Image 1 (tube, rainbow, N blue to C red):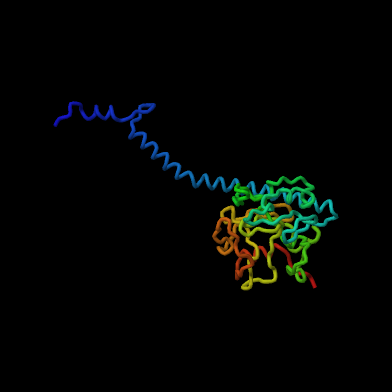
Image 2: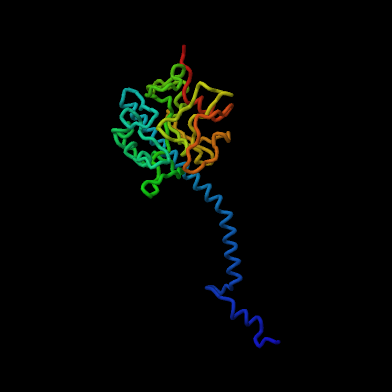
Length: 283
């Protein structure tokens, strides 16, 4: 059987045309090239987003550090207090206990910005400053999803005001800014992003008594920035610290709490934190 119409004429009739005279085949080629370019560019875009979030995190931490320093300046050199537990009240840098339940503590920004519950509230620190931009943790309350309000914890050795044994009989608890000599202010950390499945009360515990093969991870630092966390230091600077040991950055299981106070022998990240948290008292 012979076609009455040549094949090339049939193709012209059947193939859709688009603006500019492109045939369907040419359009598909262009779409394919766009897909390839997108695949090539996505990693670069993700890296740029991560870098931007890291910079914003550092900005937040520096603002917290300024408020911390201002408090000491206005209170005879005494530092804001830090304590464990869930009881809100005065005398501490912030209040509240975070978990993945429907507890209002998870969403109550007054524990961060109200003077009844936060010593830093006197310096008008916005609530958003307390949450890392890369923190995606949330809770469900009455059927609605809410972001949790805080990603940041404070070094327990910076004016711990509780009565639990953290090793204060051997190691310095810094009560005043002028006490921070060993380690010096540029090496003594104050604020740090904590993992969403580790964070609870407003203090970050670093066990200074158990070292080397006996070392433990009590609380886990965050790894929001490509296995790294934002950390602010007593001299006012902040940095993104990348963790070296995989035990410091275990797999995150969404909305599930991680086991705390676990052995981590010879972990270089634990040693790094220990060296920058406090030091032995002088005899």
